[in-house]
Length: 121
Image 1 (cartoon, helix red, strand yellow):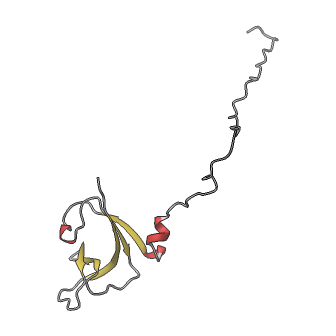
Image 2 (cartoon, rainbow, N blue to C red):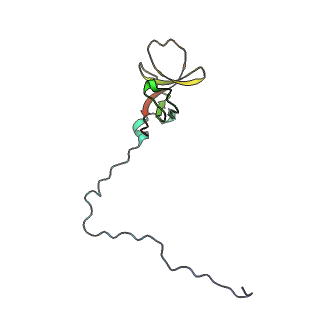
Image 3 (spheres, rainbow, N blue to C red):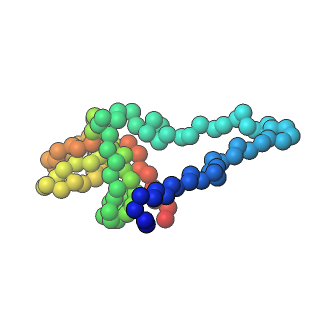
């Protein structure tokens, strides 16, 4: 480049905007009908501040039909009723137990399982 001479760069004249489609004919009768999306949080959770998701990492809870990669929805604000599944801490580990009216062993309740989302893969 020679000193004193300035080369200008010219801006492209191409338009990169996407053209809007032109509708021809009649519109589809189904365009006014849109199905709302299903929000699993609003459908499955009553108390978001005390609800947790836990993914199961093995088949050690198969006696409760809970298997690897299932997702447990656990609500810590609920008190378990008879025959409900709950997550408890026992001897420093998380366990799943079916609550019974005449519980003999000592444990600390962590939360009640409200839903089990099964993995089909």
